[in-house]
Length: 166
Ligand code: MG
Image: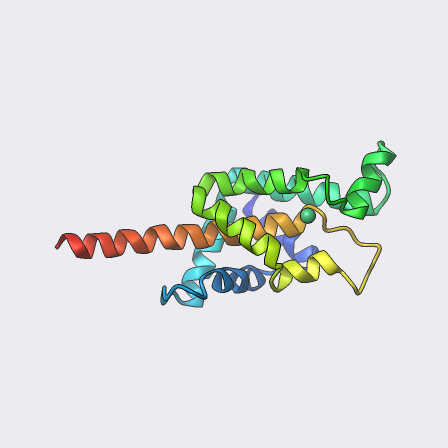
């Protein structure tokens, strides 16, 4: 299922490196010293989680169904296609991912959702193709990046903590 999710993300224009860039952006004010390879490893570990895989598959399926106009409920289809600001279920799905990684992930998500950095901005704007729908995907990508940054912060704390103890 991991490979399936990576392929789905790629099909929708998202590579691991795009998510890594968002993680680096979230850490820009903290001197974590983590390398791109370590960030990649963390992002991959987030996508290994079944709950995250389910969110990726569900969100992308809804985005695709909306843009192909095959949803049975046309009112819902319109809401998703317009990315209506009061809808909010896309964010709720993202919180589902963040909740697995604690309050720092939630805070990070709020920050990157507001700032719309890199691939998140590209997905949200999709200027090149107005008929495409990324209502769920931009939040899922934000949540994966936010969770990865949270995990790195907690791991670093553990390393510092163990050094302090010596
Ligand atoms: Mg959204």
